[in-house]
Every structure is written in C-alpha cells, then in structure tokens.
Image 1: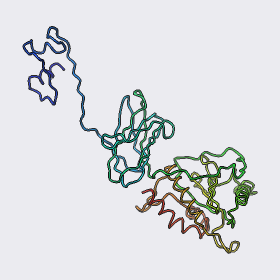
Image 2: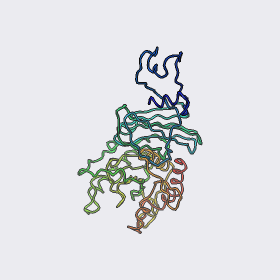
Image 3: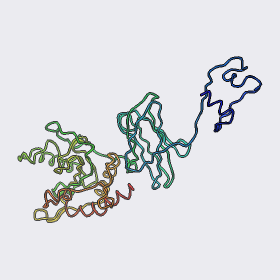
Length: 353
C-alpha cells in the first residue's frame, strides 16, 4: 500500500479524488505518514469511502427472485410500477430479512416481520411509471442465509367477512385431514351444491349447510364419503361467506384439484328434469364471489394463467376442471358458468393487472 501511496503522491499513478499531503513538506518525504511532526515512521493506513453506482436487480411483478445474505450485506432491487395502484413487496424463506422501500434517496417505508415468519412485507400505493428501490438486508449484522423477494401479482385487499364454522354448528372432521400443499395451490374452483335453494333466512341457511356436510360425511358409498364438508367456503343467497373445511387442509371437491380452494354456491344453477326452474346468481352472491376471489388471489399469491399468451385469472369451475375426466359434469350450472367465465375472470384480471 505504501508504494501505491507514493505513486499517487508523485503523480505517476492517477489519483481519483484522494489527496495526500502535509502542512509542511520540508520534512523527509513519506516519513510523516501517520505522525504529526514527521518524527516517527508508522505503517500508513488509508480508508476509502466509495460512493459510486449501486448495482440493482430488476424486479418484475409476480416473479420471485432468489438471493443470499452475507454478514453485513445489503442487496438492492429496482421496480418500475406498471400502473398506479398498491403493490406488496415481500420476502420468503427462513432467513430473518429486513426490507426498506425507497424512491430515489427517500425512504418510504420499512418492515421487519410483517410477512410470514421472519419475513418482511411492505404494501404501498405507487405511481405508474415511477421507479422504486428495495433494499434487503439481514435483521442483524451477523444474519446470513438464502431468501426470495417478490412483488406480488395482486394489489392488497382486505379479507371479506367470513362466518366461522362454529356459526353454523359444523361437525368436527371424522379423522385428521391431509394438509394442503401450498406450492400446488393454483386456483379457486367454484361449485354449486346442486340443491335448489334461494332462502336468505339465516336459520334456513345454517340448516342447509349442515345438511350438505351430513350428506357428504355420511354417504354410504365409501368412494363418495368425505371426512368433513368438501368445500373451503360456502356462499349463500344473501351473499354471506361461510367457512367450510379448514383452509390449511386439502379439500374434497374436485378430483386431482383438491389442493386448490373449493368454493360452493348454495343452490342448483343447472336446468334439468329434476330441477326445471334453476336458481340464478343474484348480485349479493356475485359480490361475495368477487370479494372472496380477490382476497384469495392476494393472500395466497395465486399466479395469473396465460394460455396462448392471454392472461386469465386463476379462477375455475368444476365442469371446466373436469372436462376430460368427466365430460358429463355440469357443476356449477349453466346459470353461473357464463358469469364466472365472462365477467368474474376479466374483473379479477383488470383489478390485478
């Protein structure tokens, strides 16, 4: 290092902003480095604070990016908001991460454990076309480990009011239910309960949900019998949302798709001999279906599906999911499928894009 300092001093090597000198250079050259009067010679030390350009990793909405934290490390990400709305930046993994969101040099928001476990989660309204910077570091200077960082596809939305199992007197599961595989949860699947029903009386609704659970759990056919109500949520004609099977458990609603979230609409929406006048979706039910779909997309971070390059919301229905397995499947009926396909799906994409 001493020879480099001498080279800087003599001008034989370019010196980028580092000035080395002494108030009285009549003393023996270089002897004074580290002393005040040149009377002693010490090994010189030099500290350079580099304030050059920071390297940023670009974030794209809905695409997780992996990273590794080293001791004292800070990692910067760049995100340009596609449109003006709220966005959620979050980390995942077992490493204790800390996040800070900036616009330019201005700190907008920071978080430690607002996400799952030891992960941060920052939700903020951003301006379309503007650039934002996210700094990720370990919570402590000694923190190390791997992590993922993500800007969620969906803007934040409040959880709708959901009536708990206890509100309708649910029976406990017959046995321990299989845990839902979070990584394999891809969509929301709508069903109807295939029993003509249009009452908004709370006692009639409770009675109807209990009958559905009993029918499913007490089915004499062991193949059709379930260990709990098959659906994760039930929507009644008044637009109330009821908790069914626990969200952290696999459903029993759609063969090969039981890691997905099953939602049943009380009623029979398919015209046939045994149901000549089918139910029709009312506005209360539509509002509840949309509110629940938005919250599930956001809270579970369900991914937008893009068959043929066209974005589709991760919203499906029983007949569509089972069109190969069971071509005769009609659930959730001809009076609800067109609205789910042509209105609900586009509404969710428009809200989330």
